Image (cartoon, rainbow, N blue to C red; front, side, top):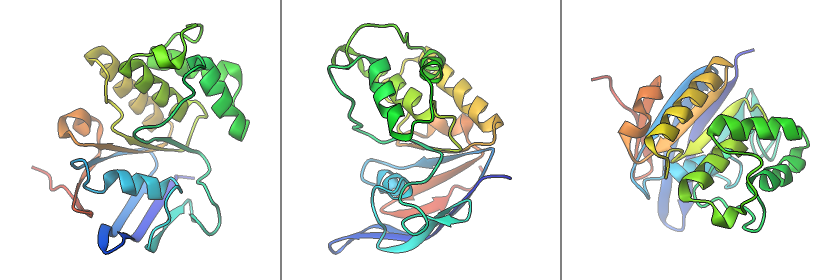
Length: 215
């Protein structure tokens, strides 16, 4: 079965402000979707709604025919990167991921180590997270998103803090996940960051999402 996400008329109001306005998208497995927008455009809010962290004011989201907030509280098989994600500063990278892995109890230590190696981190590195560089922290977030062999990946600013070599490694990972049939949504303020990976690119502006026309 090909995985599918339906986003139907998603609107989010905060007070009088409409942060998301009547968003409609159909996302298919084995495809990479881009969402470009400046900070404050609404793209991070949409990812929070899709992740089950924020309830929309109107509309609904379906994962493989099951409604979020109705048939399930959190999408099953979802890997996500959200900006300002917190890890435990005193833990090593491996210990952080092992702790997070215990929530769903679906991954072995070998799965976690393999995910770290895929993003270019040493699982045996004894440094605590607080001593990680920005790039290393971003790699750990990517490892956390992919370690459970997810069906859906929602990645907000995934290349933030990565050097050119790490960006190329990230691109390789995305293409590998795409080949497995994963649905991948990449959100960024920079079109250049993600465009070459995407089958479709959307633009988010003032809470309104539009498909970018082919040039």
